[in-house]
Amino acid sequence: MRSIAERAGVSTSNPYTYFPNKDSLFCALVIGGGPGLIGTAIVASHPGMSGVIFDQPAVARVAQAFIEEYGLDDRMEVMGGDYMTDPIGEGYDLIWAKNTLNFARDDMDSMVAKIYDSLSPGGVFISFCEGLIRERTKPDAMVLSTISPSFVGQDMCFDQGEIADSMLRVGFRSVRSRTLATDWGPMDIDIGRRD
Image (cartoon, rainbow, N blue to C red; front, side):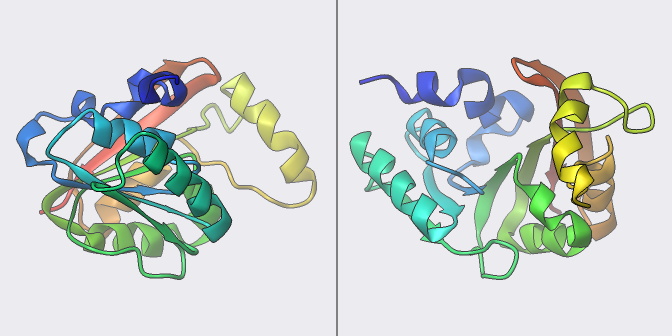
């Protein structure tokens, strides 16, 4: 059996890398968590943490299978639904969203406010997503991946700073951003802390 970190990618599975208050993470939510590999890697790496994977119902069932495969069913659960319209829970110390907020781009402030309200005081929201620059002509890999959807009127990519700006508008403090080199091109990580 391959390790969770191997399947999920070690660099994105460790939220401790991105902020200093490492002892305050007890409950994590992964929005659009897919099969749950990143969420299970985060929780497995931190014995005191529990977690929730939120995705469409059919995908959530796959995540449940991985949670059981890695023996984390006593610390993790899945929620199936539409994170844009359904409740996502509350009291989270960490909310992680990787390449999924694009679906909420047309109403970003409402989605980010929902995330903010779901965090405990002092909780952290981490978004990991593309950030287009140079009048949306770079990075090349991200621009190429948007060509087909753009032909049918689907502009789902973010400009660099768009998610961070939304975080600030809805009340996050100490928002930090940086661009990370990944195997599929440069990606932006935006980190906001709730008061």
